[in-house]
Image (cartoon, rainbow, N blue to C red; front, side, top):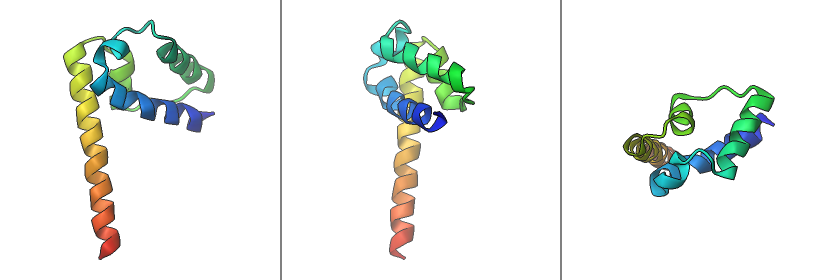
Length: 85
């Protein structure tokens, strides 16, 4: 179950950047489902996930989503370059 919650949260991060209004409205069904699953399996949230799920400040959500996507992209590029060496 924790792996499923992690995958759902993985999909929520890009939404925090591209569809900030949807994520800021905490009444959306997919956000409620994720929150219920987190409580069921006692999942520990990271800082980025905590900000996305608990904040309703749209600029903060957009910035957090962008920075997390940038971090993932840079990590992916580093791994690609390292694998070619």
